[in-house]
Image (cartoon, rainbow, N blue to C red; front, side, top):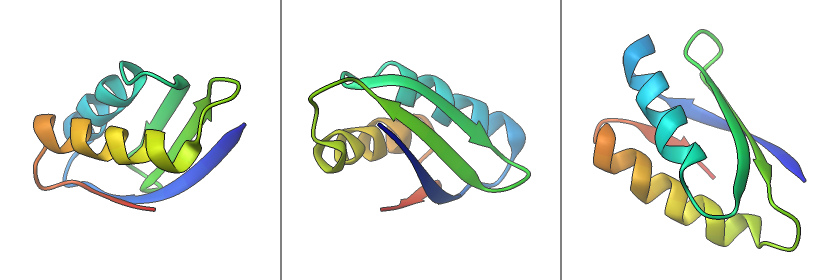
Length: 72
């Protein structure tokens, strides 16, 4: 399953940090973060609850870039 999320991030480097943090989150198969469009595209592993995984993604992204926001 793939889902798109609107994000708020200050710079392209911060977007890359968010992408790396999201990719390392259990339940995330792949992730792409675009600073230009302020969107995060997440592909989830089979059988996971996307809402629960995204809460963890948000927490992990806040650890690397505390000013970022993911609108769930």
